[in-house]
Image 1 (cartoon, rainbow, N blue to C red):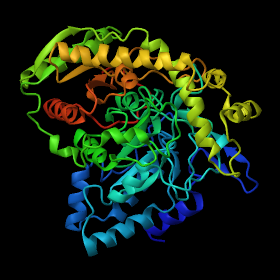
Image 2 (tube, helix red, strand yellow; image 1 turned 90 degrees about the vertical axis):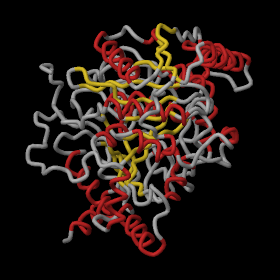
Image 3 (cartoon, rainbow, N blue to C red; image 1 turned 60 degrees about the vertical axis):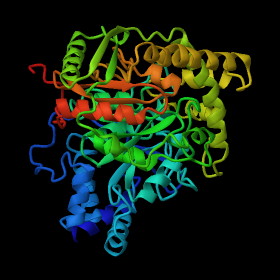
Length: 548
């Protein structure tokens, strides 16, 4: 059997079976969620991967020259997934593979031969987080067995835009179940359907959430780029933990229809890639006015179909960069790396305004109150539109399902946030309206906007987060610190770029600023990336190398 035929047969026979759970013939769910730790990386007998760290432009050059095809590229990534995701180091990033991936790639190859490429995404393999609807033979479950068998009737706006651009959707990535909105003591990267995703830099470390599988898939070279979603930190934190570039756009730049919701005032999808250039390329393909998402109306005239035009290696020259010092101090080695970054920016001609304090006050505490109200309303609307083949159609029914299936859904932690959200009132309640207004005022006009105007800044910088912690399903995540909340709560853009390594564990630096300033942030982030060239591919070590 030829390699292509072997891969295709495997996809057709086991597109779901390769994920953490499979639907049986009687509709029950069989879980294979836990993967035993490996004492070996599983890479000892692996040949060097042909596409390791390959960029979109390199893949396009190969396809344009005839050296590669979209089909051969997809085959190589699928073989990589087969060798490393559920065996070998078993990072467990993928929850489901697309049984039509190779057929789609072949169609795109034929289109390239007859009509030429659609653009820079033509034939490029992409992985989507499993809360993004795809109208194909894959499910959309947010990692929950409650949504087993849920097959979307319409692509999410993001999936539609990527298909139109010529991307090949390889599969769905595991995530923190329900995008990490279920429990106050969750383990990021764990879902009832998919099990625990592991960090490819040190397998006993956490990949961060909730776009954990997307982060690992992109970092481990399972795809060219991946798509995550963020409400607060869920793109930038896994990008930080997996040494990636992650772009959390302004809310409204990318349509959210067909994405399982948390907060309509904070949710957005964003690209996760190994370089700023690749992330910028994908972002351009994702933007546009979504007729099913009113928030995107404000992006008209603000978005760009091509963000690579802002890539400028000299982009830091004469830029004014503010250092948000109140996000420092949680780890001395992170602080030291940040100061090295500041020095590198100064060498590139940036003016550094240090010692700034971005105080968002009680917005941090009120954020969950806003989310709880919006989550209940948004999830009920999403679930209510699903067909009878799905077991749940409301948040109340999800809570009941989890109680009835505790052994699968709640073996380690509960659903305290779900219960809080279920008790919340409507979006017209004064409690919600006042909390939202306060959050926006403190993070926008009295927060980011005020600080940037006072110091005439192009962007603010801060450490994205600390090095990834050991995964602990018993007591949950152990965050040291991070800076995602101001941009998340305000709905403003945030880009994280690899900053360095602590004992071989990645950390990142965040560039964030005013609404619709993606072009400026991409210019600055690219110039920093080109000046520092930090990223190193993961080695799939069983544990962190403390001798580094």
